[in-house]
Image 1: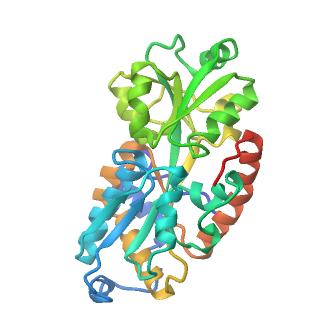
Image 2 (image 1 turned 120 degrees about the horizontal axis):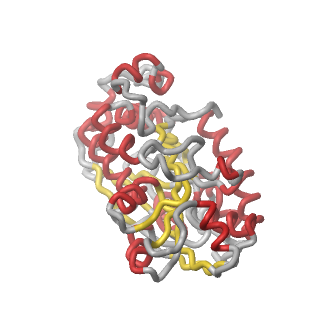
Length: 346
């Protein structure tokens, strides 16, 4: 898979966003033409199969978290493009598997779409003994964004950076939270603990929004979370930022060390947000959806509201490129799950 486009990450060295987009040919010109469609697709999509059934994004986390916020911003702008509202339906729990099962059993008409991390698609089959759906049978539509994770700590933990935390955690048992057992915020802390010889207790929650009150109150010591949630809480002074899962330091958190600069890039401190449909989604509908979502991803108002402030990285891979990414990620996730030692009942 080609390197993700990084021009939309927070910090473009002072250059206007429009010039960056123009100069680097944003998204490799993944426009409506690349999808084989032109703007009339919006009206055609709005009128096609108009049985009165609403359009829905199914999200496997509670409202207010990183994935939910991104889905709401995407749904708002995509709905305006196709002149139909898109409803967000939150189905939290079971590492996004409840939401994924719901989409897997939906009609393949393009009206029910899963907006999720890679966890229920490339990871759960190695984590759980039995699944209620077949991950490979879902239809990958588009890889929307890559999200760096941030390791955050309660404000009164006696450390100020990643090096100090690692030294402290090797001498003191740690209570770590996650947004769900075996999920994208669980495995990095499991990998970190394994690599550094840290003794820790895991406390899972149903999403980051449910986890933060316990971190702020001191019931848990640390957790991994998406950059969006982390930035708001760090800026408010409610938690400390210890490490970020970006290659270079995040411009919004210049004093927070990266895991890579500490030789810990192997813990996988990032995740993706993608759009998936049920098995049998017609190719014509898949292309229409790619065109809609691509148009949103290159909309400066969407970028300024939902991408840049959160240090997300727009991706946009679809078709064979997205399939290849998932194939490689399955192999990687298998190794991570095995290394973590996590095994759950389905």
